[in-house]
Length: 85
Image 1 (spheres, rainbow, N blue to C red):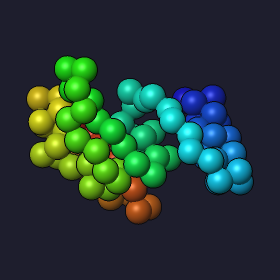
Image 2: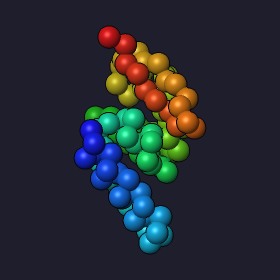
Image 3: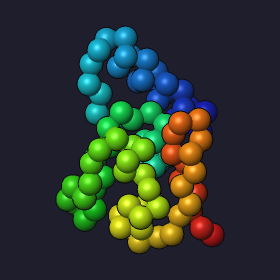
C-alpha cells in the first residue's frame, strides 16, 4: 500500500507540474477516487460510464458495474467505497 500510494502521489505531482495528461489503469476504486480527475469505468470490455470520480463512484453505479452492494462515504472531499462482507 505504501508504494502504491507513493507512486500515485508522484504521478499526480508530475501531471500537475508539467500540465500533462496521464492515463493510468487501476483496479482499485479508492485509488482512482483519490487521485483521478476523470474516470472511464469499463464493464465486459466496454465503456460503461465516464465522468468525475465523485459522480461515478456512487453505490448505484458500483452495483451496476460490479453487481455488489457497497457503502460510499465522503472522506476529505473524495469518495471512499466500502464493500459489504
